[in-house]
Structures are given as structure tokens and as C-alpha cells.
Length: 246
Image (cartoon, rainbow, N blue to C red; front, top):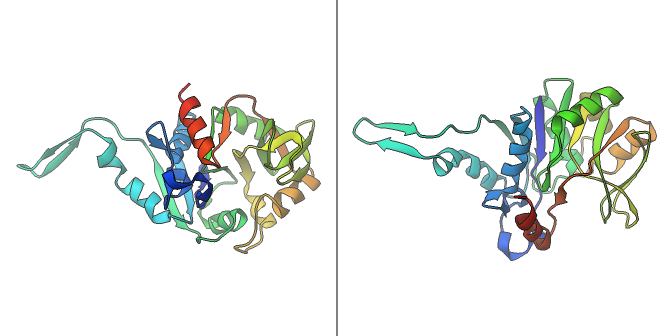
């Protein structure tokens, strides 16, 4: 099953420590955010990734292009012109797709449609860390039988607020300041979701598509009460570096 990680964010609110660096490459305990996200999915057996790229996409490509030799112990035998890795590299398959610097989330998702070859795929943001059980999330999605499942987090925030009844979203309001269940990413989606997304760079997934799904009772909500952090500011990045290890 494909796992889509949205990687187009500029990370401008992370300030100078990540200047000119895309948000997914911000470092948490010595590794980029995206590395931690991919390891979370790998833990549950999902290792086929699609990265819709935007700002700094070349830097993300460069990170993975050089990943093997920079992150492995190896023997370089110049006599026999041979290189031997001393530890096993991650078993990753990664599809890199340039989706435009200014494209919004919906537009990025629409542009990777042709790379999805199964009825169901997963989606998350390239700036969120969680100890979510991916297998339990997928099982929940299958049991609910809806077109989409979003992970809900109970907290007060500026993020999208979900009204939930019996595990089904009744409304989706972006950037509310009220207490409630917020959009925590970590989606499971049926490919019919592409019918809800306009083929426009300006399409924002969290607005019309998700609101329409909620209105049609096609958006289920998996409530996660464990660790979750969206890294939107430099303060969030500092918090992640303090708390993610534990």
C-alpha cells in the first residue's frame, strides 16, 4: 500500500535554524522529520512512499540520493573497486514527484493520482510526529467503510476542528480556535477521494474536499490519544527534540 507524505511546505515559521530548508528536513534528534515519519510507517510494514515535492524539493531528493553512503558504515575497497555495506539499509521504495512550489495540499494530492495503483492509500503531512498505531488505524478505516479516515486529536488549537458522532465526521472547520477534535493527519483514503479534489494548484484538501466528505458522512475519525505533535514553529521543533525520544 502506498504512503503519501506531503512535502511541499516552506517552513518559513521555523525561522533561521532551518532557513532555505524544506520543513520535512528540519532535524529532530539528529534525523529529519520525514525520516521519523517513514520509520513510523515502516514499523507496521509500510515502506512504499510517494513524496509530492514543492519548496526545496531538490534538497529532499539530495538527502535520499546521498542517504545510503552518509548513513551507513561501509568498506571502500579501491584495490578491487568495490564497496561493501556493513549494516543493512532501510528497505524503502520512494517515488519523488515535483508538484510545484506554490501548489496547495489538494493540488499536490491530485498530481500523484496516477501513481496510486490500489483502491486504498495512506496520506500524512511531512511535519507531524506521532506514536500512532498504523495497523489499528487501517483496521478502523476498513471497519467503518467510509471513503476517508482522518486521525483526530483532542486539543485546543488553531488547526481544523472536527465534529464527530459515533466515529463519523459531521463537520470540518479549518483553523477554529475552539476546543475540539483537530485534524491530526495520518489519513487512510479510498481512491474515490480524487473525485472530490479539483484539478487546480489552488485546491486546499482541508477545505472543500474534506468538508464535502464530512457533509456526506464519508469521513470517519480515528481518535488517537497518544503522542502527537505538528511542527509548525521553531518552538514546536524544540519541543519535538525534547519529547520525541521518550
